[in-house]
Image (cartoon, rainbow, N blue to C red; front, side):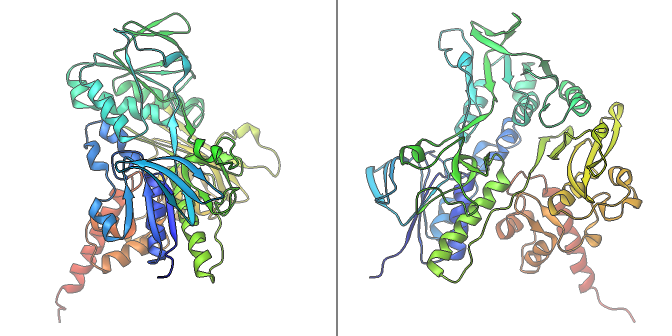
Amino acid sequence: MSHRPRVIIVGGGMVGARCAEELRSRSRSLEIIVLGDEEHLAYNRVLLSTALAGSLAPSETELHSARWWRERDIDFRTSTSVQAVEAAARTVLVDGPAGPEQLPFDHLVLATGARSFLPPTLTTAHDVGHPEILGLRGRADCERVLAAARGARNIAVIGGGVLGVEIADALARNPDVAGRGARVSLLHPGDAPMDKQLGATPGAILARCVREQGVDLMLGARAAGVEEGGLRLGDGQFVPADLVVVSAGVRANTALAENAGVDVRRGIVIDERCSTSADGLWAAGDCAEFDGVPTGTLRPGWEQAEVVAHNICAQFGGAQEPRTVAHRREAVRLKIDALDVASFGRWCVEPFDWEPGGPDVTVLSDPAAGRYGKLVVESGRIVGGVLVGMDDVVGAVTQMFDSGAMAPLDRLAMLTGTESAGAGGGEPEPADMPGEHTVCQCNAVSKDALVRAHGEGACDVAAIAECTRATTGCGTCAGKVEKILGWLDAQDAHAREPATV
């Protein structure tokens, strides 16, 4: 019997799962094993903040059922930890429900993700009466936070970055928390939430919005220690808390790679093909570092997973050229219902930084109305920006940034979404949307792809997600997908109408 090449993926998260899917879509001959240390199958971690709000159960974030993985001949193992990697021998030592086992591999993909960082001042609170201190990284974390929040009178969220704002907003909107009149505080050391992604004026707009949602926003606040009944801040102020949720950044899970002799800095070092310093070992997602920068967000992690799958299969197929990852700067989107916030690229360039030959900066600021827009344009293309409360143009602007298309000359009209902005104005209607228009940014799904899937029988959002993966990332494109499906259904109905003479 001929040898069936084996690929082992360490990590059963969104990137590891995507890599397994991409491998199988390219090859039926590979043996694919996914080793996940969580008790759950792969789930959509992006939706955990939505689960905190009570809008869906944590169990509803699952990406695929066990049957789905079996039907694709992918051995997805849960509650299985990898104890060691022997790079030269190409084996891994695993410990799962069946006990310790040594597995040989032809290729190993490290998709071990990252873990929440807990500051040392917050990791020693185990005394009776001290608040429970939790991070939010996985589904089990989400379930623990929800369980603790049900009985908490005072909840403190530490860290006003993207995730911290989403956590505080979600808990404040959770019917169980809000219904009991529990207090939700958001402690942030900066002058405004998301100050590292927004700047002063848009940060102030977001701060006002957060407070309007019932969150007690405390700026310039640093937790110095944990005491009975709450937190002591650096300035001596006491913040009551039964539950503390920490969102103070993450650290890449690199121990397996480091112990195997693989090059590691802030993450597992990968080249443009996503290979590591060890032959046959690859890395993707939050555990990886490319060109000196940790991966950080979902879309580049998914792209790395696709690159890994392509390059592994190319080694067996022979004819395919190696694929490389793109050097792109991702847009950051805040997912709260009350305000649309996006930051992307070189956003921090200010109008008065202008020099001949340098980037042009256009700013539209209306703090009273909760709207702020900034575009940084260089050589006719958008290279950065900030959009707050600009729901009508955020899709078109981030699309133009992502694609590198030429921006219209009237930048102010582009920010206002007026007709003079042309293609750069507000989100186009389905009929006016070009086929190559990207509808789902997370998965790079175009309108053409949705039209093809609809023509093949995918007539609702769930079916579209199965066929194209649209809506399976952050989920913010679901409304656009529904709108396009409605337009396609109307087109079909019109085509079926009998012709009149």
